[in-house]
Structure formats: C-alpha cells, structure tokens
Image (cartoon, rainbow over all chains, first blue to last red; front, side, top):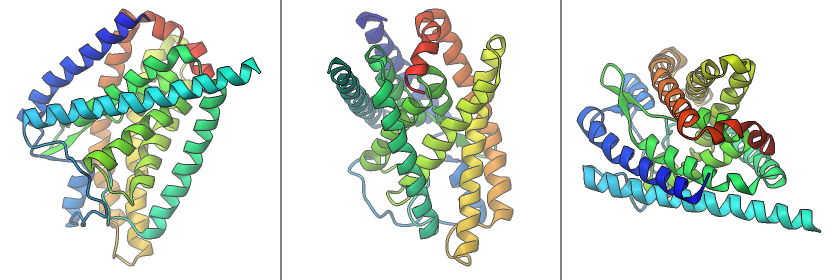
Length: 96
Length: 219
C-alpha cells in the first residue's frame, strides 16, 4: 500500500467516526453497556476510581469528536513508534 | 466491557495483572523477533481505527449498548501477537487518558479483551478452511466477544465467592446477564468485523493477499 492509500484510509476512518458519532448520540449515548447493565441488574454501583484520568469522552458531539481525534492520534502515534522501533531493532540485529 | 475500580476482589485483580503482563511480554518478544517493517503503517492505522470504533456504542435490547472490541479484526489482519500489542495500546490510552476502565482493573481488562479476545478469535479463525475464511472471520469475532464476556462473568462470580459478597456479582446474575447481553453484542462485532474484512478484500486486496506472510511474521 502507498502513502496516499494510508492517508485515504485515515481520512475515511475519521469521516466514518464523525458519521457514526451522530448515530451514537441519537441511539446509544444514554445507555450503559453489557457490564454496566449487569452491575445495574445486580444492584452494584461503580466505585470511586483509584486514578482520575485528565479527560473523558465528552457529553456532546463536538467534545466526543475531538476526544476521538485525540485518542486516534495518540493510539496511532504510540503504535507506529513501537512497531517502527521494533522493526529497526530487528533490522539492525539482522545486519550484524 | 471495561471493568471499573472497586468491582473485583484484589486477588482476582492480581491474577489479571499476572496473566496480562506475561502474555504482553511474550507478544512483544515475538513481534520484536519477526516484525515486517512494511506492515507498520497498517498496524498503526488498525489500532487507531479500533480505538475510535470502540467509542461508537450501538444499541441492542433493553436499553443496553455494546461496542466493537476489535480483537478478532486485529488478529485476522496482523496475527495474534501484534493484535495483543494493538489492543494493549488502546486499553492503556483509554484508561490513562480517558478514564475508561479502572487502573487497578487494567490487568483484567487486558486479559479479557487483549489476551482472551485475541487468542480465542485467532484459534477460531484458524479452525476454518480457506474457502470458508469469511465465515471464520465472523465466527471468530462473535466468539471473541462471548469468551471475553464469559471471562468477565467468571471473574465477577469468583470475586463474589472469594470475598463473601464484598466484591463482584454472584454467578446466578453475572453469568446469564453477561452472556445474554454479549451473545447479542457479539453479533454486532461479527457483522462489523465481517463487513470490514470484505471491504478490505475489495478495496485493498493486497492486505488480504499478503496477510498470510504478514501473519507469519507476527505468529
């Protein structure tokens, strides 16, 4: 795959995310997931978190969209860096 | 399916950390040894795409929602060890940056979604012959969600039993509830994973065609 194809893929994912988020806020945002529902069925409440994260996914479309973009960038950057370093290390080992 | 802090018994949390760290360390070892640099952009885009897909909960029934885990998609596209690392990066960012899943429960969340989800998907996918590959992808996706949910339900039940009810949820509630919801959520995972796989086969057949050698580099 070429660089152009990868850029297209990134743009495509972001566009799909922007569209999907509309449906998320229409149909799902106010409901819990399978585990949360199980906790609700058992009358168990979520405890106080041990660690408070600096951000959350947001309560409205724009905040969630930018949270998603930030997460997308962070996950992409960290994964790319890790796999790239692993690839370079392997290459230099093989060259020895 | 992200477990929050304070829900599971400490001993179950500890077991989760031990399993997760051992499998992640082994996966790092395997990937470092056999990675193909050409697959790096694909793996990074896949990881970032799964992250945003996990944000998009879809409704099922009874006011419940589910979201893609992505373990099956990653496993069939880049192999199980790279998939474990991809899911690990996602879950760590979700926990530390967005507070999705508790810090003490991160080991269990990694065990359920990155480890069990990935290897159950991979094992299921490998059971299917090449001509039934697409069915195998969908089955792998469904079973990865169901297995991760079963593990979570078991951890809830074990926490309840070991702590005398101070933590977790009794098996009579946790098992039918978790398995019932996730049997349906798994259908969503199967449809999304199958659709992405078919789409890639059409628009980027090189990914699918070169997947065998690519998968060997990370298995």
